[in-house]
Image (tube, rainbow, N blue to C red; front, top):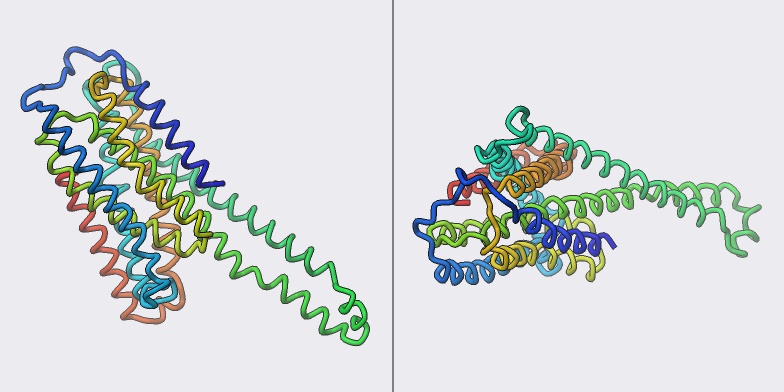
Length: 350
């Protein structure tokens, strides 16, 4: 159900955002056409679609290899290191890639009218998105916890005929058994937690992926598109590893896992396709396009920063298993810095 909701959201964004972006712009913000080559740029975009699709699919699929390779299972040290790497990637995506782009869009000289230059709206929206993510995270987790507790209580309150016959003889045992059923949800609670995390994280990643895909698709400058092909391929590869790790821990049904991986893998290529389709009428320097892009980028940044720090990194780094082993702590910190560093380095090109 959640995967369907994400698919609908992506479809609406792909349809609505271009329409909002096609608008009048100030002549002072006219784009420089030097170096424009639509045919060559189109060939590079087709290559980008293939590369990004493959990179996204590989990234999202790597954590699932734990079913065949025991070293990649969620309970191993290697998986924790991989997740720390992915957390660094997602954190750098929010802080180094997306948030600066939001500030740049909302601080553009093309935004002559409106309050955009008088207040740091990008920071405000990112903060509100992080708070909203916290609210959704806690409410959704609490709701599922209560639902599971009610189901467990209902099972306990419905004894079988055999239980009724032996109730008087083994009253103490029956009571202990009932309490054990109610005490079982800790594992279920952790599972619910991972499922909420995977859905919210995919939402933030998908919004960002759609935007960068549209930005690439609307460009007719080979000099701009060419370096973005490898940069965005690695970008999506790393993000896919982070998302895939959360999906694996959520232990979803195969159908849901495939749906979430497909949505993530297809979002950027679909964004590129939409960008190509509207490239003749889309003006990236128009006020409406800048405002829409800036606000969505800021919201995506807030979601990803919260998810990286709270739901991915803090959750693993504070586990007794990690804190009681100095080598594992060092390994996770190195992995975190490596992921954040590599993703930050990609900001030179993308």
